[in-house]
Image (cartoon, rainbow, N blue to C red):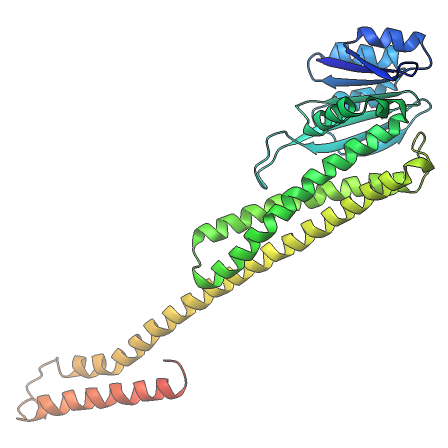
Length: 323
């Protein structure tokens, strides 16, 4: 589906429609247009982008892919920004990503996404509230979309913080395998967020330096905000990743300690029974010429020796702190 918003400066109004508004935009140099493309027909999208907006063929190909690393490229008539946004339905750290492409020119903004984007929907609502926003620089709208996208990553991270605090207490109070599974899952998702944030941070750094066409000094505040939010996202993702890693290591250390305690107890029982088993083995052979075989007190003496040996070993183990 191709949706368009055409801003007319004379009336300060926005016309909403489809690809037919692109022709009107081409003929009226005072208008500004936003074209949003949701995946439906790659050939139709390619034809529109290359013929109407004269966009570079390689950039168009990258924008139409379902998956590509985030990047920024500058061309004569447009700046191409490729981002990795979040799928509309997000439940905590269980998220899916979408590819969000933006072409920013002097009088146009073209966005393309392969799935529904809440950041694009958010911008549409903002234009309904303030139609004149489309009359400003197209890069301003792009910066707002990028800021909104980063805010969604931050919301995921901030929502995860209380759960990590709960898990930290549970690891020491009621450790079980479900906690280990949950922590491992969080660690995997946080690694992905940190990787995505590092890609986007490179883009934000380049935009912030002010060398990107169409992103002029008037956008300093929005671009600084974009950079700072990405820096915080990367920082929090790294911090929570390390926290999850520490909790996993703590869980494994506690599990290893409990196993060592069990093995220690079993070893002590084995050592305790070795000498008395040896004595029982000797006196269980029943040779006729054994001196103690016909002793009337032999049974009690052997039991007494066994008892004393066990007591001495337990006393020794207790004194060494093994029990």
